Length: 427
Image 1 (tube, one colour):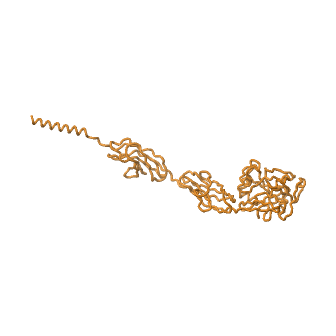
Image 2: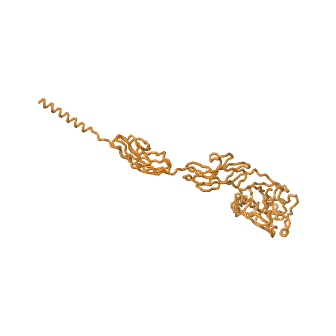
Image 3: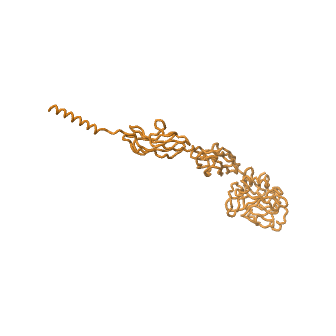
């Protein structure tokens, strides 16, 4: 019986150990289960990605991220990757160091003790690389003591939208938008015009066009301008003092002539009778409506016989020829727009609406009206007429005309006996 009892004990012990082993045996871990997130925020050299680990496979996730390549099914030993923490769930990845305009394959990955698993292979194209724009600077024009006109031409946006453009200027070379005065002239490619203001007379300025996109700011070629020196004044033989203005290569009176004397100090006849004016074939002048008060506002009205003498303007000055008027008109952009750049702004002297006026030339043209060939006064406040020294022939001479409701500067020819305003230009 003792022998049996010992065998029984051994059996029971073996059985117990077998049961114990069966109860403590663990199942083997498997690789994780995960998916690759869609790619977003795609640029020329970077993008955003990530993944979602839905199962750790029975073992802790020790590394996770994405890997990418220009070939399908990238892996972490062979290709570039990110490392984005541990554990299951959603994670995000920053994909950097890419090449522009290139097709990439991306897979998320997750590693546990059983190995590394991958999400699906997805593809995306990086964008074209954005570079700074390409542009040129427009040659400056309409240069006065305090203003000028320039601009630029944006020939390429560099692959990104142009968000700002204009010109910048300084009294030193290499002006920039951060250190110099600038204009803001819209967005996009193509040509644009810039109005430069706040300049000082007799000063050299350096100007560059600029254009900005997301890659930065680019500049056009540098140009320079030299603003005219401060204008002086001129005095006639009556002692009237006139402001002057430099416009392009010409120096003009900035006021209408109001002298009663020729520059040889002889008197100009003041004709106040209508019938006398109509029959006049010699020099003569009058004030509008024969009112002396008009003298200091719009100056005098002179027939062309006074112009023909060559003695009407102060010494060193003369009544402009037709070609000199044309030079002024062309410099200001042509007849269709020059009028607005010549007229005094506002409606103190001009009637409403005083169309197109900027007076950016500084000429400050005033509406002195006229006395016609029948001796009647017309259009004070509405129109201005100015003689030239050029004879058109047949009893007519050339002149120029401005109106309150037009921005143009018109060439006209009228009979010698009409009375117009006079502007003198320096010899």
